[in-house]
Image 1 (spheres, rainbow, N blue to C red):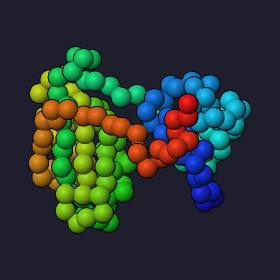
Image 2 (image 1 turned 120 degrees about the vertical axis):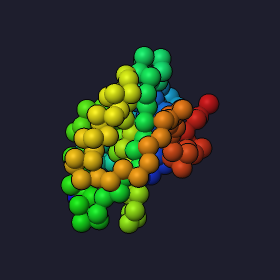
Image 3 (image 1 turned 180 degrees about the horizontal axis):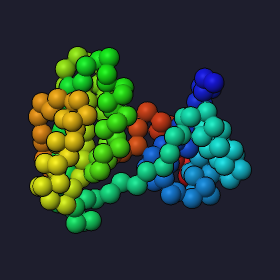
Length: 158
C-alpha cells in the first residue's frame, strides 16, 4: 500500500516526534493546534502506512560508559548488498547501517563497544560476512536532529 501524501499536520506531528519520540500527544496537539484524538489518529495511520517505522532513543555513548563508537566504511557487491546489510545489522555492537547506491564504499556500519578488542572482533565478523572493510573511523560525536523539511507554520503555534 502506497502511503498517502503527508499534509502539513502530518509533517508537523513527524517533526515533533523526531525531536522527541516521547513527546506527549497533548503537547504535540497544543503545538499543532489540533485535538489529541487527531494526533493519535494521524500517528496510528502513519504507523499503519509505514511512514513511522519505530521510535528510537539517542544514546550518548560517552555518558553511558561506552568508549568506542566506530564507523566501518565497507564495500559489498551490488548483487549481495541487501543480504549483507540485513546480516550485518544482527552483529553484536552494530547500532546503525547505511546502504548507499554506489559501486564502492556502499555500506557504512556504525558500532559501539566498551573496548578495542570488541571492535577488532566485530571487524573480523564483518569481513566473514563478505563485506570488504575499506576504512575504519573512530567517531568523535554522533547526533541526530529532526528533518527541517517537516517544520512549517503549523509546527509551533502560540
